[in-house]
Image (cartoon, rainbow, N blue to C red):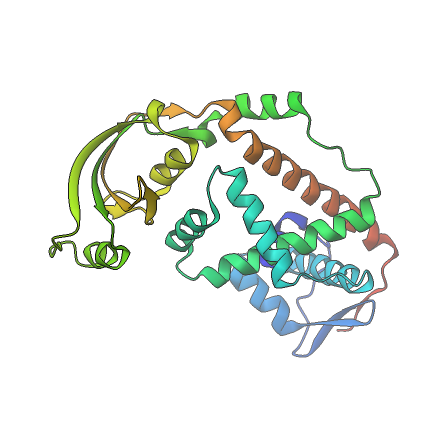
Length: 274
């Protein structure tokens, strides 16, 4: 959960130069060891005081989650991932395939999704209506300020692989030098203006000289091999509106938690052991 807690960094302003091995600090009787501090310094490239502040925030966060009896099961995680897919204009299968291309290990992404679900549940418990919901004006302003985040290529040169047999198409993707008789190859040039949002996202996220995930079109299985991407243009606001809403609310949630735990530190029982 280090990614989340990097947003909650608060320097403790305490020097710990003389701490030996063992428990260094307790937070509401929960121990933080010297090893925890040194590992956090190494993994996150932080100074000692910054690492201590990070670990105190982490301890307070996990205690709040436990005290509020919050957890996230596989159904919660799947629902969250489905919403992410929809926000990006994609069906769940294609979205998962893109995620697997980026992460390599899909379970890492599932862990991040679980952390996000827990954070959202905690927010619902402690906010009590104090977190402003992004409106149309907020989203339009965010879009104008961050157009670079919502850019795509103007055109794509691709080789389209199609087959009515998914196994044959999969084999062709895994062995592109050996093409079965029931797999057709067609060179295409695709202009972004003619593509549906899902296809825009799919091609934009697929690396050069790579295949897109397999999808269905015209009663066939299809995959596109991306040869070249040309130019840059911004996706229109309506296409990315759902993603913008998620981005804004995630930022507001993290800021609220940061402020909340700053206040929690004032009353928490934090002790320097050695």
